[in-house]
Length: 281
Image (tube, rainbow, N blue to C red; front, side):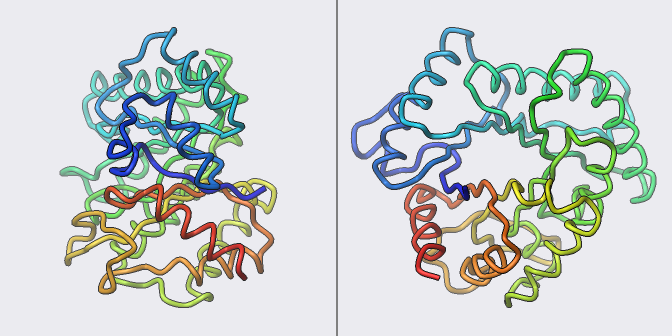
């Protein structure tokens, strides 16, 4: 079943007097949503007791939880010691996600840095092969690890690069951030076929079964010549992208992804708008 939900807590969550992530389960469910992404963006700082408490709250409401690993992961870092920290960030995020009862871990793969693009992508791929070994050694192969398409030109994470990484092993499934793609490609996502071409490419390369349960991030994003500048809300009518063409493409291709709204402060409301658009088709 297709899922819709927010990334973290929206401004309306706090305006309603809520403060704890456990309360987000009911908040999300009451809005007709059925997933939630918890962010470890600044680091994996959570106790086992807290993770279990969050997991119990979401299980009670039948809302699926995923996590976003720390933002400073960089598998193209030329320093092996710094790259080793990135392995730890992903694995620690996965272990916390497991305690919460979730299965999906989203992570940013890499930044190009001073290396040329080919060198940075090759190094990222080799490091993700090592990460795969750590995943199996830690008995985490039942989790879904989602390298994300990125919005800035200096970041590693085109559709083609992410698809290449996911060919390493079935533990990897793409996280496709359509706002990021639209930003790095200067407003490329406008029509149903624009979305279908990207989705069909991944289906052809990775198989329907893996892409059917794709992980998706969606928001409107301001961009410049260098790509992503900042996340916006659905109220924006300048930058895009629009969700309805993607919803049509998902229906036509029979995909049932996990869709997370990353709107700036209105993520719960915009997730509900996406669900409404999808259900009206």
